[in-house]
Image (cartoon, rainbow, N blue to C red):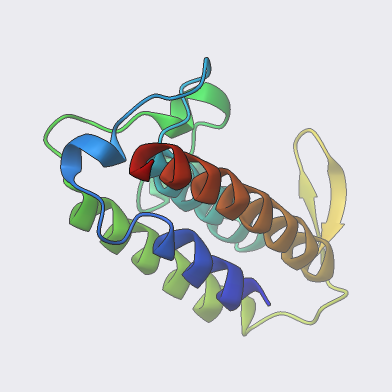
Length: 142
């Protein structure tokens, strides 16, 4: 289900122009491309930092949560951000393969979490953001 939601999130931006992918249609910093950037950050936080125990500065990209996770540099293309998310997702798969579903780690704000919790949280998060992406895409195309 997580892989399905990852794919659906990517599908919300496929075929958009660079300009449309960056359009802000809501009051927040949310943009179609920003949703993918945010999801890549979530992958790194939950799988690389929390589950694998890597220090944030050793993760393979940004790990700042919140509004900052939606910001995409002007020099990053939509293809770059899709590739970043796909790389982060693949690394998450590799990391998770070494853990039992009920093995726990400690998140600095949430407390003890299992791989099962991380899967459920990211499934829910990416499903919600896919819905956001669908709505943004609908606004762009109409």
